[in-house]
Image (cartoon, rainbow, N blue to C red; front, side, top):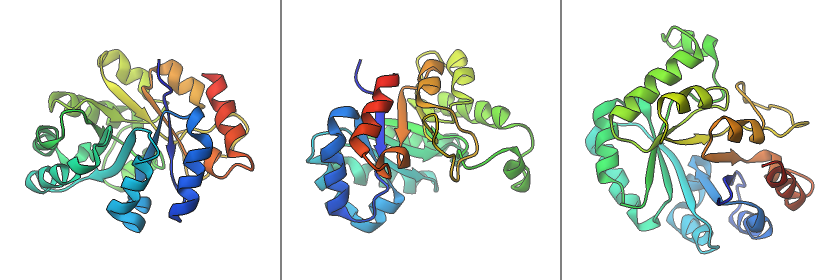
Length: 224
């Protein structure tokens, strides 16, 4: 089985980002490029990282009217991403159009509830119920829309896996034992997430900001 670790490349400068990927590429399965990276480096940056030979996960979290999201999805065909994110809260029609517009080899996954949020945050936005209830509600909507899977925390992935056996599950907010949680609230270890059914493990700061990124990546890989 291929390595499920995708490095979240939260490095603001392009050359250090490329150097980091080059160092750890033997111990990761892909690279996640989010809004910070995309806004800073654009098309050039995506192509530069793609040239290093690992699958690219474009974590752009599209959330707009269906036509706009479909057009954006078509625009990123040039990057040949392995994975792209949309927000499940954009609704079924938006997700259907996103999937229809995606390249044949791209998995479209829906963000359910950011791992920086908890039930109190949901309530403050007018959504009532537990994190588990909200994640399952949006997972069912993404499934009905024909998406490949969802993004959720490691605390919910096992629950969703039982209902969506062949789903593709991306789990961020992971922290190896001994690492602080930072701005994440619903946190598990990479091994726990994998055991619970995660397809992709998104790991950023525990590798990118480690004193020895190669040793950190190797250590995480060894737990899987």
